[in-house]
Structure formats: structure tokens, C-alpha cells
Image (cartoon, rainbow, N blue to C red; front, side):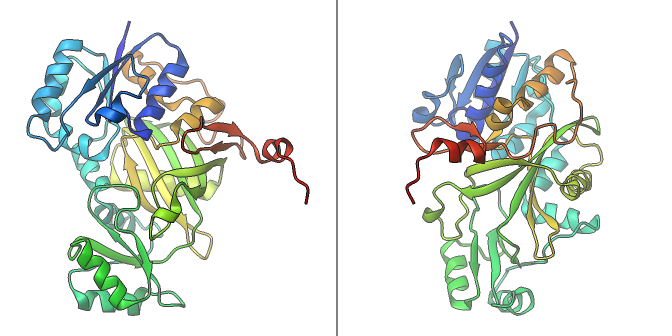
Length: 356
């Protein structure tokens, strides 16, 4: 029986991977590693190891200890920070006999820092919103003047590692922006960008040695708990919908190749449409699946299974098309304390009573 280690176990994004692997029912043993006990205990992995946080100095020792004890066939890191730290001692991880499919460290470092990836996109000639790094108040004034839309609004965000719309704030008010950056100790870490529309898509792909294995597009109909965030962005998709757009496919592939000479592993290209209807890449979630990965698995495209089949067995999927094999219009609904639901708009309307 093959063994698969999934890190970040207990988090929404890792739970989706674990659930997808269990859904495949291929009889592998799933081992979850996580640093938050109250989350870890709720995940469905067959074994669950409580680990120190990846920033902890004991993390490396404890990870190697688990790998030597369990001797897994594959490890999958499902968190940006943990992956960037672990790849610094990749050779020691591989010496335990475990396999992984990941990009090189340079690609990881580029993608976990949004401004670095923005520079790569722009250098490759891909349409992106203009950015200005905010080192001081003068930079902020200049950004509001040069990048503001018809209302003078720009998009502020942090460049450092982290998801969930870290530091995001749309504003056209200099004092509000300055206070926000002060509060987040963000001078030198924040950027101001041209404001795009609210229409977003993610092009999730798996690559092997520079060749595309599969890619599927999903648009977002809304963020969960958006009222709790000043920007409305939480990083947690409330409603996802399968879709396809040749321009998104084109931009997605170009973005992956802009950050990596030979794409390898998982590349999730987040894009936001501008007012001209052009999808602009805003970041690449590198070497990890997004939080709604179970959506695709339930719909018939099990990407965690595809990944582990390549890594462990050298087996590739038999698909009619590599680009967007799922039908358009499938919906994935999520809410707290409810099981997620795979459905369509027509099924929703049929299931509900309406007297007005």
C-alpha cells in the first residue's frame, strides 16, 4: 500500500486534497501533517501527526523524523510558506526515499512574492495592472495620482507571503491609505495597483517537465465571509463555477512559462478581468491546489489523483482534452457547518420554493 503525506492537514485547502484522494479510493494510506491541533483532529487522513509550525526551528528535524518513520512514497506540501521553507532542504527530504513533483526553488520564490511574479509577467509582455512599490508617503501620493481610476481609487496590498487578500484595501483617500499602511507596518512591503473589476477566474494546471498535463478554469461568484474583510476579499471562495475562455487559457499558459522555464507541478494562475475584458494575472498559487479542489474531483476531474498517479506510478490521465475537460456551469457551494454541494443554477432554482 502506497503512502502519501499531505502537509497543512486540517486547513481547508489541505482537507480538499485529502478528501479528493480518499474519493479516488485507490487504497493508499493518507498521512496528514499539521500544526494546529484543533484543525488537524478534524481532517480525514488515516494518520495525523501534530507538527511544529514551519517557521519553528524544530520543523526540519521533526519533518525528517516523520518521513524516516513512515517511509511514504509521496509528499505534497499544501501551503506556500511551508513549501518555500522545506525546499531549502529538498535533498535531505528526498534522501528519505519520498518523491514529490514541485518546481525549482527560484520559481517558488518568485510566485510566493507577488511583486516578483508581477515583474516576470510584465517582462513577458503579459497584460498586467501597473504597480508602484510604496516606500514612503510620496510614493503613495504618486500612485493615487498616476494609477487611480475615474474615482481616484487604487488597490493596496501586501507583497509578502500569505493569502486571503493580505493587506488588501481599495481606496482613493490618502489619509486612509497612509493609516492602513502604518497599521500593517507595510512601508516597503505594500504596493499600489490599478483597480481591476470584481470578475475573477483561476486557471488551475498540472505540468510535468514543461508539458501541460491538464488545466481547468473556475470563476468565483463570491467570497465567503466577505463582510469580515475591508476589501471584501477573504481568500475563501463561497461559490465556484466551472467555465472556459480561450483567452484565459492563453494567459494562463503564458504566465506559467513567464515564471518558469520548465513548469513542473501545480500552477494556479489567479486572474482578474480589466475594464476592457482582458484577464490580467495577479498571482500564481504555486505547487498547491486551491481550497475548492474537491469541487473538480466531485465533478469528475480529480487533480490530486492525477498528481499522485504521476509521482508514484508514472501514470498519466486519459482525457479527451487537456484544457477545461469539465462542462461549463457546474457550481460548488460552500458554507460553515454544511457539507459543500455540487449543483447547477437550474437545480438550485428547481429545489427552492418561491411565492413572489
